[in-house]
Length: 126
Length: 126
Length: 126
Length: 126
Image 1 (cartoon, each protein chain N blue to C red):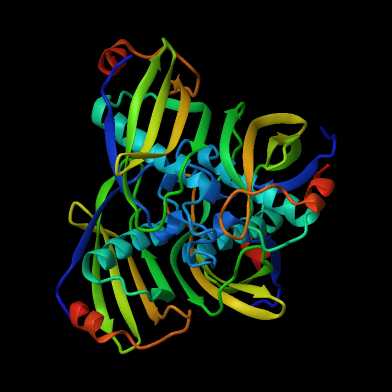
Image 2 (tube, chains in turn yellow, green, red, brown):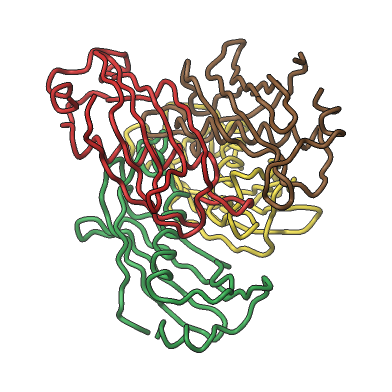
């Protein structure tokens, strides 16, 4: 839908690794949230709503990231609905993809209920 | 493939929650790993291999778990291949499903490379 | 002040470990919170207050816990003030102490402000 | 011992917060490790040793950090011994200190045993 890609650099610390010597698989989900958080802070105005909340996600692990790796998460809007969106996030190091995450997020209002995405946010995301 | 279900009880602490007042979405992936770890410890003998490593996973968030919730993770082998398996894990509280995780894991040997699942482990899992 | 010890069993999963092959040092702080949470749920009634919030903590790492270790956290009230308490938590496996945590927690009311610990909770903790 | 301060900027995501609406107390320990990791990567050469491993730490929580807060961790070498060091880390936002961590770390060789800090690392840290 759009070709705009948001880039979020990150570095692996001991906190992210496990006894297998690689980044712990659940950490990709967490680091992806950091990237989406920054993406949202950089693009959409705060308006009192809760905002986008993940309803479904999938992760494909291609190559393991390791301690002290520096990499970038590329976040891209894959689909924009009236009340939800789909996001694709790639973990990229030296032009290689290490993992891909897809998430579907519903827009949640201040009352904790799903609602249509406000027009001004639709415009920005487009 | 089998109807055996492994049950793992767990309680939500502050560690698992986020500022939205609910369990943080990446934590489901982590708590599911605790349940699989216990399942493996309870069923399969240690043999020097690394064992099953997640290659793909997906999570569907149905209802949010919250602070101090007591629940059970039901882990079930969904499919057993010669070198990988598929697992289904349900987060269940008071007979209601809060989240479902599907994972595909490859069997990894001591040399960090994928290999066929040893016969004795196949037999136990079946 | 009291000799009562609350015991909380726990098992180490990959989630808790790091690339050094041992339990990640910040995880002790998190697992200790799980133990205090259970201790509080088991002993003190919910009353609408936030409850005890950690203001200071220290951890002494004696021996590293590792993947698949089963152990117990022994939680003991070390000191009870009128608006705060001091707690000591030992990580014990096979009668050996692996780590000791000391925490000082202030009692916080529903308005997010420190207040005196209610009489009924003082009585229970004593 | 030295006045050199290493600065590490960080932003709070949902991952770091808890249901109390603030940054989870164990996360300060984890974020501090990220800062030390970067400090070490920036200053000391990799030599095959494990490096510095935390033996004792204490945290003082002064003011809570919250979702979306941007802040800096100031890391300073407080003391340098022949086989260990003491580090002080301040969480600073808008010139205010939110938390202070003190850590004592032993130097660990490739054989997982404590040893004297190599001369070239001593020189750099001084």
